[in-house]
Length: 406
Length: 104
Image 1 (cartoon, rainbow over the protein chains, first blue to last red):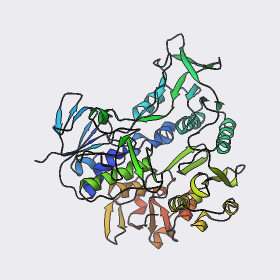
Image 2 (image 1 turned 120 degrees about the vertical axis):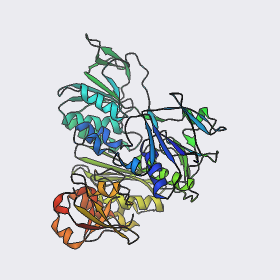
Image 3 (image 1 turned 30 degrees about the horizontal axis):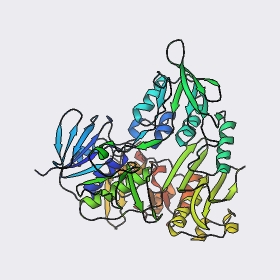
Image 4 (image 1 turned 180 degrees about the vertical axis):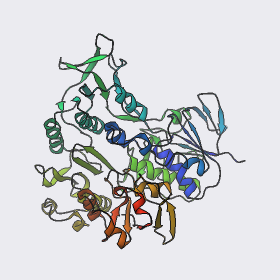
């Protein structure tokens, strides 16, 4: 019996790699190891429909739970890899079990960025990354709870929107002077802030959290800020970003630099070791740079690329990055990576809550935020990939379809 | 079990047993058809695009606005285009016949 392909991490990238190996005809053993107790599932709904209670966990699974057995993909769930020995070609689980591999795929994903302030360990203070995190939040959430959300990024704002829907009272505390600063221009961020405030979300910008205070039962009761305020909170949810989970790779002597360093097929410098998903630093020929992405699209596409490389039919991967978010009635889709210096061209009407913000860099269409403007989304992906140079005046006219600029 | 008759991008046709209560997209995904369905069914990505057979297209409720807009952005939209995540599979859809659309 040959040694298996061992995939460390049963998230979207790991799950996709296992599935793609079988779809591409790989007949050797495949073992998928994950530290959560679930088969691979989608994370994006955790802070949206799943938190809201609109879908149960069985609708989050990437494939039905019996799929893996049906396709001879072995699972070790609820287990962690503690170390890799690249010379012996083994991984050792924290339980002590040692397993040999033929090929190793690191799909270790991300971990939450932690807030290092007093009181962060109090009951009632949560991070939001896993299904288990959300189940814990839901178990503690009272309908009219005061919920302090630390961080005004995607997670924070999605959670705030759901909280209003559930009847809770959210306060978003953001260190910077705008929400979603990484993804969008200030004028678009102002629009989101306006909508959130109109829906009853209290947004505090330019505000840092200095600590959490206990109530008389010893649970969290308030948030202290660097502006000297005390904000009452029955529950705290921290969403201040994620970091690539690269500890295993680094300890095994693989190159790590803001992610595990791989090529455009997900190969590390060790011919037996590959990596896919959030944990990688990879080149993107379309963008002409290396990058690390926190996205489903990257996890899925890179998982496929790694499977292709393992079966000896490498297919370099380069796609325009894209993301989405749902907040209230706002369907937000993001294509490309914008920078603060980019020129912003608005198509459509902020008042009608239906517009796109296009980002031009030296005249080149590099990114877009579509807000209830789904018609622009697919065309925008093509424009970014092609490095299109649309006339800004015509671009600002929403009656001219983006397709016309291809 | 009710059936779904699926023609893949390579022209081959396969009949699958459909699970009711799931979307058509989830049924296609569980049966390894090459739809990416990246957004998982929240109508945000248009990567589960299919063409329905004419008679089935006529039988189903009309597209909602989000679905319509996403499809209009696609380079492959046809009269019978649907996003398969927006169709819930049920016993009434036994025999649903569709073709996987090309990727954008």
